Image (cartoon, rainbow over all chains, first blue to last red; front, top):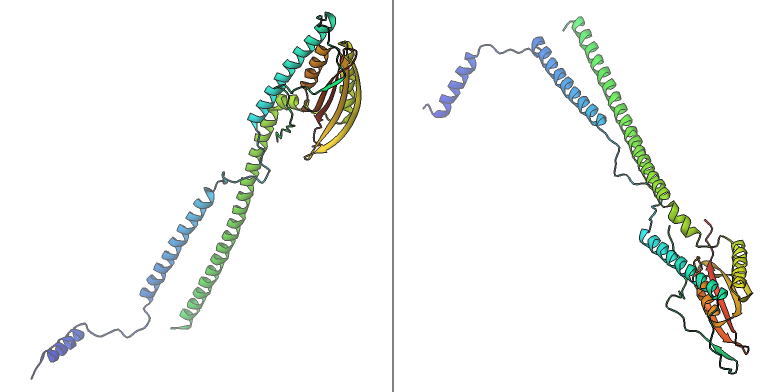
Length: 141
Length: 172
């Protein structure tokens, strides 16, 4: 009985035979030649592309502007300097005023009331508001 | 294959191997040069940053020269400045009718800073003594008053005893 498998086998055999004789040669010069050319062409194109990329990459390199310097950072405390200058100016004004008063008192002294004779006494004057009783060392740099 | 075909095949293989070797060598050379280039670029970037920092600091030094000069004058540079200061104070005190003597002149160190201490004793009229005290309080130096005592003498005159601290500039 002829089944499906047998029919398929017959058809397969007939088709194989319709292709004619098979070529049993291993090397085909034309085919190998063009295959080699194709591989070489692929290598050439990929190599050229990589070289072009390298050229563009190195050609567009720029120095990193975010690089930091190892030099110590100098911080200028402008507010502290301005404050110190203002204080010096105020002191200079007060100094000039006191000098003027001292010189004017010496040239034309104002009469003082008669002092009350008391035993010798030690008196510590109260500090004025201007006296800076604490040292301030300004660190500018 | 005949012998000629075999020769051509061998020559072609050798040429291919040689070309691939040269190509690999060139790729290695390119990578090496690229690494050197990155190193140079990094060094260049650091140099540029150093230059920019130098320019900033130079500009800051120039712009603040007058202010720093004024502030520098507010300190004694060394002990010799105190001698000239003492001379000025003594002559000024004499010119305004005060008898002034310098009882102490020393150099001390406090809190990592150096100071010149001076103790003045000055005698005269009450108002002159008080105003001279304010005068010493406002001298154009970084200074402070450590102590001050007013004493009234038996002859009606007042005596002031004042110890002054003047900052000594730190050596750079």
